[in-house]
Amino acid sequence: MKILILGGIKEAADLAARLVEESHDVTSSLAGRTKEPKPIVGDVRVGGFGGAEGLAEYLTAHLFDKLIDATHPFATQISANAKLAAETTGIEFEVITRPPWQKQEGDHWIDISTLEEARDVLEPNARVLLALGSQYIDVFQTRADIFFLVRMVDQPEQPLPLPNHELLLGKPSPDWHKEAETLKAHSITHVVCRNSGGSGAYAKIEAARALRIPVVMVQR
Image (tube, rainbow, N blue to C red; front, side):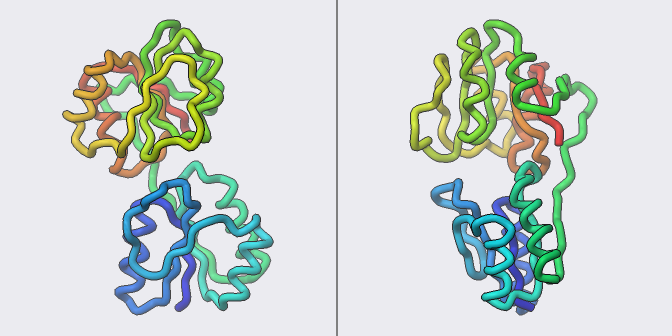
C-alpha cells in the first residue's frame, strides 16, 4: 500500500519503520516544529497542507491508499483536518493515539483542562518547570510573580514573552534521577505540562513524584 502517516511522535516513526519493513510505500509528514528531527525510515515531507482541502488534494494527487493520523494527542486541528480529508476522498483511514499517563500512588496532580486554568492555579512566587512548546508560552506572560524554567528542544526564533524565566534547551532525560536533579538545581516547586502520554517525557512526572512536587496537568 501507499501510506501517508501524519506523524511527529516516536510511535509514528516506529510505525513507519515497521510498515516499510513490510514493503509498504510510506511517507511521513511532519509539521516542522523541530528543526532537526530524528531520521525516519521511508519518505519524509515537512510542512502543512493548507487545511483539510489541501490534504485531500495531496492524497488524491499522489495516489495514496491509506491515511494514518499518528499526531500528538493535543494536535486537534490536524486531526480534525485528517478526518475530514479522509471523508472527502474516501481513503482508508486509521487513528493511532497513545494512551494518557495515569496517576500513580504518590502523584500530586492538579488536573485542569486549559492552559489558562494552569496559569491561574499557580501559587504566587512559585518556581515552575514549563514543559510546553513555544506556541503555548504567551498565556503565562501575565504571571510576573512566578519564575519559569522553560524547556524547549530548539532555540525559539523570538524572545520569550515571560518577564521572569530561564531557557533550558534540549530534550528531557528519560532518567527520572536526572530530571530530579534539574528540578532540585532550580528549586522548582511546580511542574506544568500536558498529558501527552508516552515514555519520552514521563521521567519528569516520576521525578516530581519522588520530590513530592505538584504537577499541574492539562488533561485531554
